[in-house]
Length: 90
Image (cartoon, rainbow, N blue to C red; front, side, top):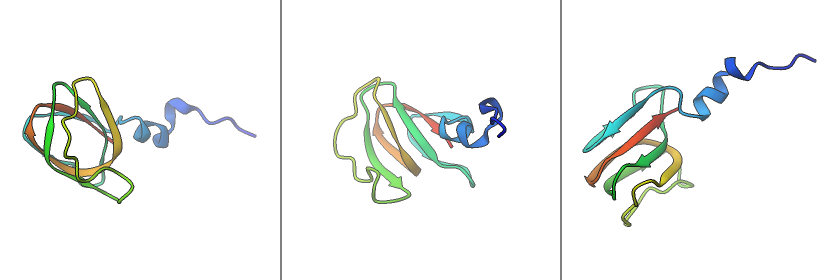
């Protein structure tokens, strides 16, 4: 049985957001073929919208998310009322 080299595993890379990232201060839509798999808040942040791929992920956030928190999920788009965040793509 061959051992899979995890350094070359696309599945592992996608799961850890190695398809890229972006700083968001207003709105963001994931490029075609990708989704937002993690959001790290750089300051206290409030969403206007957060579009999830399925109902098992937060899609109606009404709280203020504190700086330093990372929200994991599977999202396609987001708009911030206030704050800033880094999104990671998978």
